[in-house]
Length: 96
Image (cartoon, rainbow, N blue to C red; front, top):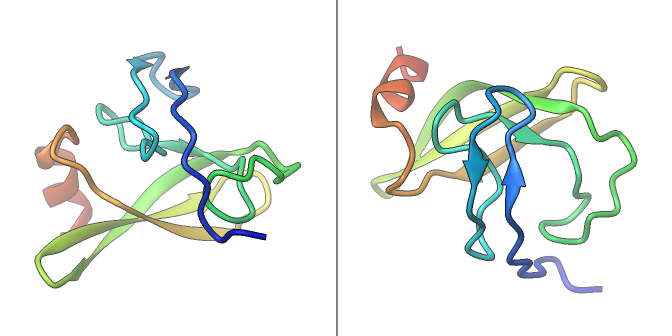
């Protein structure tokens, strides 16, 4: 099984209702940074939890911001790369 599967899907954010246009790498809302717990491995859509993933922190890796999410339902922790469309003010707030 591949560890990453590209899926170009549009979705409506379960937290703020923003309509997100997928790029195949989109895995969180650029307006509020929330995600949804849908994958075991990126893009596989095999996770049964389906809980909202709250952004709880930021890491930096070689100049790239990594958003740390915690599932509000099962408490799993996942990391997602930020993208240029993300609300940078929220990223800075998470880094405090």
